[in-house]
Each structure stands twice: as structure tokens, then as C-alpha cells.
Amino acid sequence: MKVISACLIGCECRYDQKSCLDEGLEQLLRDGKVIPVCPEQLGGLPTPRPPAEIVGGDGNDVLDGRAKVIDRTGRDVTAEFLAGAYQALRLAKTVGATSAILKENSPSCGSSFVYDGHFAGKKVPGAGVTAALFRRHGIEVKSEQS
Image (cartoon, rainbow, N blue to C red; front, top):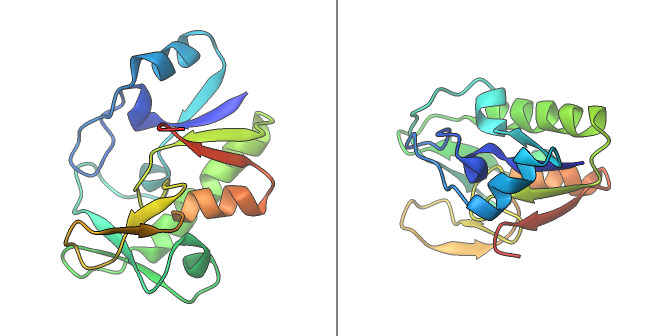
């Protein structure tokens, strides 16, 4: 069993209330091979919501208290991102997931890149909060682009 970002299988749970449907990945759900999660919704954030970016590092820095997740309005949503990451981890452990397919560039799910925290569309190397937490707990993380 794998965990997958819910937006990748058609759930309209992104900040802009859209999905990033990948029909090949959606087939994994039909085959019962993945469990969808949206860490941002699991953390209590509404949909739609203002976009958020990690300021001061990446998901590892957020987990270590050295960076924050701030939305475009300036609101600190770090607590919600952390809560959602831990809820997603709980679900992953419950189903015995050893790997995850997460949405690249997301402040929660990015596996290799996240936005730089300036809301200018610039991507930098790094992991989202949930991706970083999964890796710390031995769950292999890949993006939909891998």
C-alpha cells in the first residue's frame, strides 16, 4: 500500500480548489493500491485557501522549528501544516505504507522542490513538511513526476 496526494487522483483539494488529476495514478486507487491524503485539509485548512509557502528553509526546517509556513495574506499556518503531516503519517502507518507519491512543489508534499517563500513563483530544492516527515519515518517519497 502507498500513500498518494489526493489532488493527484482527482480530489479538488488544492489551495485553489482544483485537482492535478493523473489518470495513471488514479488507476492505482481503483486497483486498491493507494490511500489518498491531503495533509493541508487533514491539518484543518479550508478549501479554497490562500496559497502558502515555506519561509526560511524547507519542510525539514519546519519540523525542526527553524522555518515557518506562511500564507499569501501573511498568516502563519505552520501549526496546521504540522498537524496535517502528522495525521497523514498516522494514516500511512495504519495501512502499512512504505512509500508515497506526493505532489511536487507543494509546501506539504513537494519531494524535491518547494517554492522559495516569496510568492514569486521561484522553486528551490527542498521537501515539503509531509514529505520530510515521511522520510524521517522511513517512508520512501517520490513525486508524480518520478
